[in-house]
Length: 288
Image 1 (cartoon, rainbow, N blue to C red):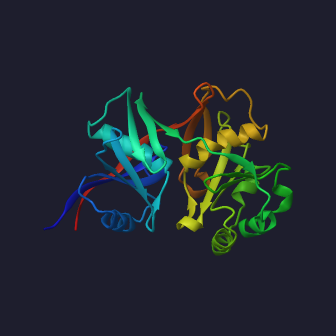
Image 2: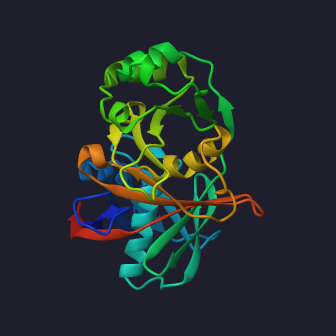
């Protein structure tokens, strides 16, 4: 018997088509893990989100790249919230929970913005293969800020540069980066950022490289933009933004996929959130 599912392609962290980061989204309780992986491979987007029923939360949410399941994905979660809202399954000013590989996360819809809780990471100074990483990224040493590299416990490595020009001039050797990730096992994905921005109301501009996970460069990465607020605070690059104040992170401009991520941290509850808009680009059906 042929299976049929409804599947959307949604651009997240933007309200303009062909910008932000695209994700596939579908809602089904009848897909095997093998089928989910095959669907994600067929969609060939950085992530495809699979929503299903849950006994532990309002919904279960999984994210698959074309090659594997991942523990957290910001843009595909924002896309999933947009999918549920557009289908009339959730409504404005509603809070819901998702059961995920990263635990139960809180999300909400508020006046056209989709809000997602991000797990609080551990932040530590990175003292590993810095020179090799910079060589693999094609970064000149004079363009690197005199600040520590920061590594998260999920393998995200954060590196601060002095300017937007330096950030946009990065010329990575993705094969070399993948070799470094696989051989050293010290980091898996790299977030390079600067506090020089395109828009005056932004706090930082980010680029994100993940060849280890089959994604050379991700257009807009919520799971990196959220922790970046904590990184900026740790490095002394931001003030008065650790108590529910929204800051804006820029990403995707260099790829002509402009995206904007809003981030806030609630110190009283130790909760980190990202927020953004989304727009549906494709609605379709898949048969297999």
